[in-house]
Image (cartoon, rainbow, N blue to C red):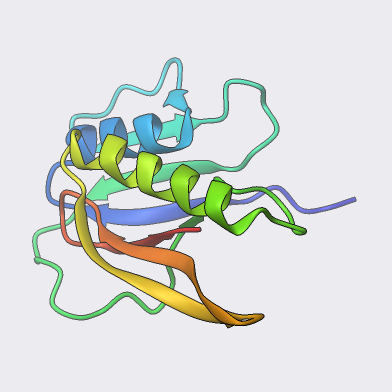
Length: 131
């Protein structure tokens, strides 16, 4: 049996960051979690791991060594055009909630380059990818 785990994230504004990630992952705020210096989001189906956000005094200063990849395209084999459309639609949706698109990364596949993933920043500057 797998071990249950939670990702912990430092934050300047835990409630705002939790709201962004709940939107990004189709999660909900954890019922009963009431802490002015923290927030937590959970998978409403009870399958995925929780993410906790804790207020810290220091600002983010360097690139994340660990980040989330939002896998909207599912598992291979892919229709590369459909996959790119799904990723770009997700990026556009996340930008409306405070995410920032940094760049698109392309992979060599067959005879050409295809969109592999999109690097983004959440509202507090934490890197993540949409793939």
